[in-house]
Image 1 (cartoon, rainbow, N blue to C red):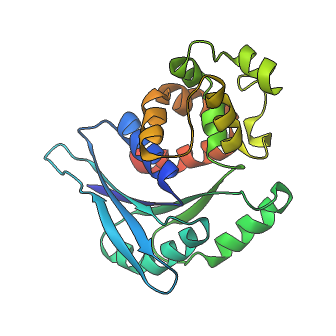
Image 2: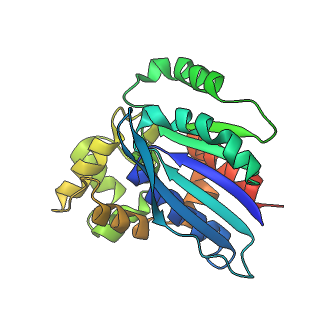
Length: 233
């Protein structure tokens, strides 16, 4: 059984990554454990959110580790690298937003984060969602019509001046604000509550994300590429 650890910065990424993994790996062949960090910088402790269910069909075991802070993703990866290596994990991936760092400083941020990662026997990588992971959700424009049939790309362009089907969503300065405005247009909320995030996750088209958007959204392509290295023999 292959083992992968994914460190994320918040609940949005946690819920999305878990759903994405189930969709592309198959619910019977993958077991997912979810843990989250609580406390503050002086005293941090982990809480088990979801236990992994392992059966004879399980081929992949994934730990999704929610650091609940963009600044803690790499430090948590570094602190747990040795334990995960000793526990048989084959790869470690980190996922965090560029925001609130300016896009002009993305390269500097990525260089600094990679420099902080430990070097050892298993690969460890960090992916930056530009500017936020919500840029991926904006680019998956099909899900807006599932939220409300009036939320077509043309309607979004008419209302907000950009088209999620044809424009570069990684160029949006604050994608989460765009999501909020689009949802608010039809009386829906996007305040990142667990209920709303689960609604989002259930409406995303994962085949479209995985097969088509991964070719046109660079940060998504990088993340999916690391998943493929783990999931595909």
